[in-house]
Amino acid sequence: MSVFKIVTPQGASFTVAGGGYAYEMEALAPIGAEIVEAPNDEGAFIAAARHADAIYAKGIPITKTIIDALENCKVITLGSVGVDSVDVKAATARGIPVTNVPDTFIEEVADHAMMLLLAGFRRLVQQDKMVREGRWAEGRPALSTIPRLMGQTLGFVSFGRVARAVAKRAAPFGLRMLAYDPFIQETLISEHGVVPATLSEVLSQSDFVSMHAPARPELQHMLTEQHFRQMKRGAIFINTGRGATVQEEALIKALQEGWIAHAALDVLETEPPSHNNPLLRMDNVTLTAHVASASARFDAARKRRVGHELALVLQGLWPVSCVNPSVLQNTALKRWQPVGMDRGPNS
Image (cartoon, one colour):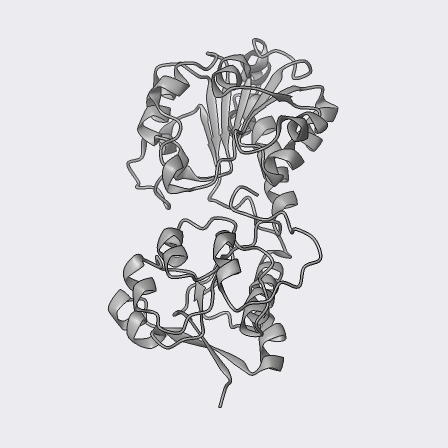
């Protein structure tokens, strides 16, 4: 009989359903923990999870209704950066730590953001289409009005770990960089060769606006019509953060009416998008399927991190990446880290 019971929604995975839990169990098996799959229906999930020691959150929203029904839960663990699928406020009220993996996919997402910037700027998708359709002679004229990249301005909305990694990649291209993030010290932004700025300054001065804000309730539709109207007509908007932070209707209008020139998006407000989403039919949009974090190491890295976080808490220790750290002081969990781990939802 297992010592600890961890309940997770049935079949849900970032890769393929039913992929197993071998990576998570590397840390969990030695302490006698088991992972039990429960139905995805909220009521049935509650019935299975009510007495669980931990919740491995994936696939379905972990709502206040679910959280309030938990009687023995010591931690809710996510295998993602975003924590929007869990009602963190409800978990905090119950004194339950919520963990994520904020530093596992930084390099991959930064690579993807830089790829979208370059592909959008040099109109890669349109150029590829011209060649395939026998329109070879149209390629050079299509780029004849586009300025050189060097000397242009890249602006970041939020300057967490991914944005900082993008800044490191963008610097050799000769880009001037600005960043808006009211939760980060200006001196830290400056240390990365980036100028601290207001949101209005980032939007109005940037040739590229790269969105990295986390999907927190207060940031729902952070960027609206008024913000896209502030941007340059030749600007490119890049989003590798979360689709919900952008009012998609306003972005579509901005692209259709020429307030901005192009959008390069890895995330959308609704995923997958409806077949009638206008973005799918627009030549001035580059799209990828929320894949920025994907790589050969993705699944193993995040699953091992999940197992590690669960094992720490079940053994009575603080987790590494707690998005509601205020609850830790009021639990029986013991701090083992010699220094602050600098983790959180803005990472």
